Length: 108
Image 1 (cartoon, rainbow, N blue to C red):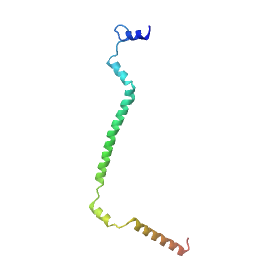
Image 2: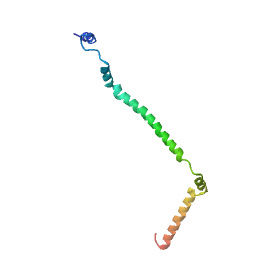
Image 3: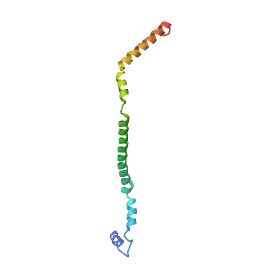
Image 4: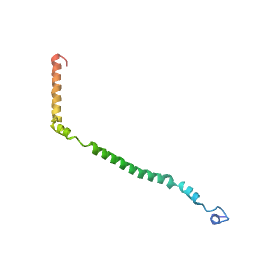
């Protein structure tokens, strides 16, 4: 009996196994590589895309709400004339005064 004769008998009624029923086909499908790896991967990718979109939208909504500045505060900031250069000059003068005070007292 070769493999060809076994193949003939499997599908026939009365000889060999009966053809698989719907539950058997479903079990076989669930055990396949597509269901084990492919479907979870697709769900992860699609779900991640929707989740990322929602979180990005929340970020932009919060920025839009908290990004507005009060007009009185804006005017106050415009009146402030402190710049990086003026602050540097102020700190350099302050440091020079502290050094000269220590030198006069004999501390170096």
